[in-house]
Length: 137
Image 1 (cartoon, one colour):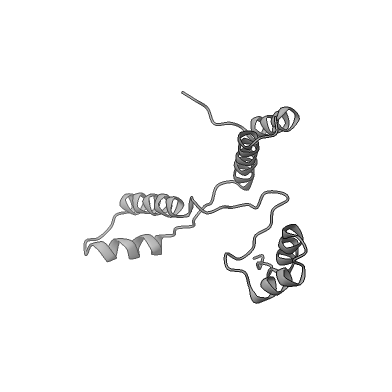
Image 2: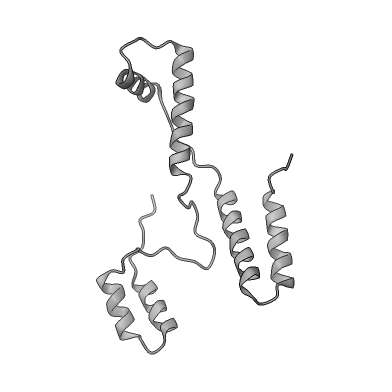
């Protein structure tokens, strides 16, 4: 049976790869993958609060029969699992050196790219700087 890599194991592998990587696409991909895995592990699990009212509403939506307390706990466990599976593909952290930007560039981003189009790098930097910042809740 294989154990999960600890955060320290992942950090060690990143350090080793950074020190020994041969320039090339496969090493760069492996390093990106390890950094993404580290960000996900450090962010921790996504938890979804499920209360009795939610579980009862779910039960009443699929059946008219009454629900016992043991059954209610089972339904709550199932709902938590379903919600976790639904949310699993979403990223929970932005790796260091990366930023989140909209999928579709805003007008401000497009204008900034045109103003700073001397090089693609400058255009991209200008667009990222002009991107709206997500609200932190």
